[in-house]
Image (cartoon, rainbow, N blue to C red; front, side, top):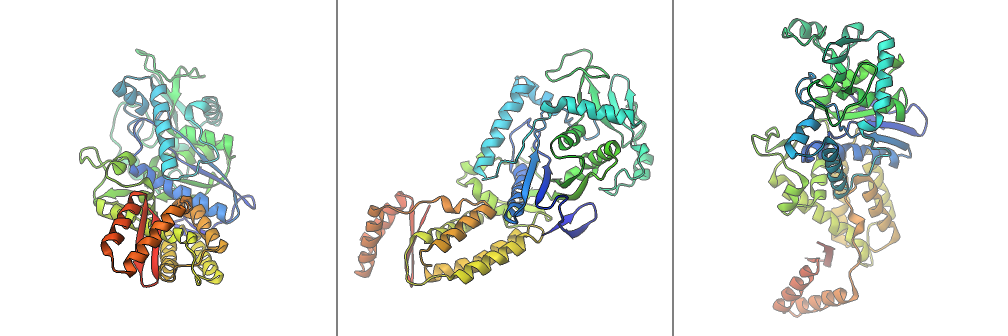
Length: 463
């Protein structure tokens, strides 16, 4: 298996730290608002990564967090905590806001057929670990205090700060705006923020430095160390995490442990909407509910995302998702061939060769567009031949579901009465009684059965 490593800017052979096991961490949602398709475009990729690793025989320990405290509206540690902002907006406690959007996220995960990671910890469940982590950095001389603000990490103590993003530190420092923040260096970041003296927050804790709450970056480092260890195989996130969040995770973790933090950094590119950046001002931030209201299934969106590589920007449009909807409909018809007996069909050899070629594509840095193109060749041949009903083909469809997560194998065989309708329709067609044929087709459609005619006979599929 080969993966593109952001740290080295090269595609590399994947070699795990422990033979047969993979430690994988994904930066999760900040649960202050409805998750949107930009969020889900990222987690579909990490789900594919986990599926491909498991298919290759690895035991995957996948941790994906929920950020429910400490993520300020600016990456520069300024502005409100996003959870506090949501609490004011919705007139609920920050705890209630977090729980509401966690529930919503987990419902959406099910709709997208995203496998639940091994652990999905909340930042607020690991406060003591975060405090202990900061104390360790303090003992090693990496921290300083800004009065009324918090405890900060001193990035000047590191020679290689910014190595993931390849930051021009001298340029950043010389171009930094002179302000009264008290930071020693423009790149320094908050580890622990003090609560405002004039108000009590919903989420605040006692610490050796005073009442407050953790900064955004520290939660990931603390949870990774607690659940996966000092050094892990793979860390994933969006490309927007590279210059600040992931850069700061590396700085604080390697300063504490003295060990390499991550072996493979993998980042998902952005999704655009009709070629434009997602923004509230453009009104183009869509949720899964938005898609469903327009007649699209969440799995149509999953397939749309699998049709592009994660390195490139994806583009969402209503035309694109309509095409994905029709493509998934065709794949469902292909999968439903397993219920339809024919004398001749796709051979075991052809199934094996297709599966091997798809695995080769997916293990080449998750090349799902190539894997789908390979599948399309088999699909075209199978639909022409009306593949035989056999256990080998059913097993192949089960494998497709396990690797692509498109839920193709969940449909059931039609009933005897529906089979009888299909035969009556075919008889009417032979007798050129097209009105009866069309009436029966409409009745089957009302029952969720689509019928297609071909030179080889009819084929049905679930709608």
